[in-house]
Amino acid sequence: MKYYLLSAIVIGITLHTACTRAITPAPAVEGKRIGVYDSRSVAVAFAGSEKHEASLRGLDATAMREKQALMHEQGFSTAPVDDILALYPGEVAALKAKHNLDALVSKWDKPALDQYAGTTQIDVTDELIEIPKPNDGQRKSAQEIKKIKPISREQARTLKD
Image (cartoon, rainbow, N blue to C red; front, side, top):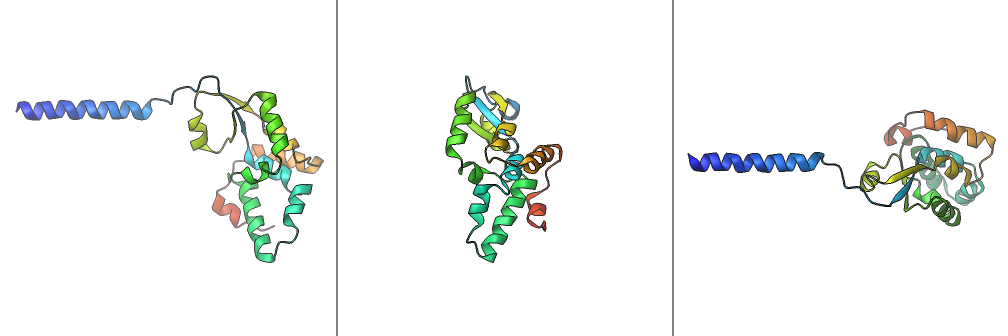
């Protein structure tokens, strides 16, 4: 009987400890600052830009379809835009320096945001929108997309122009 009681106590303590750890928030990352942004806005501002147009030149029909599907995922869903940001290394570095940021993280990237739990978060969406030098229509669309709930990546891949 003592063995069963002891086993039950040990199991109870183990379960309590596991549950407590599961709901305990990640410790704060002292002094870290991250820039958060709506990746869809970045993609929409980038579409039609000089660098976007240059990236399309010379693509065959298959590559063009793949590129379009990716842009739909980035512009209407939550696909990462790291490839877009990589085209502007100087501008991104300057933005990070301006705000003393340790990283830029999409507001849709929950695992990355969890890594930075407890950090100071600064929304830099509007500043990132300006990097590809959008025209007024692109800028307006990039702002408007923020008001709309993203669709699934699967839905975005099936969108037609």
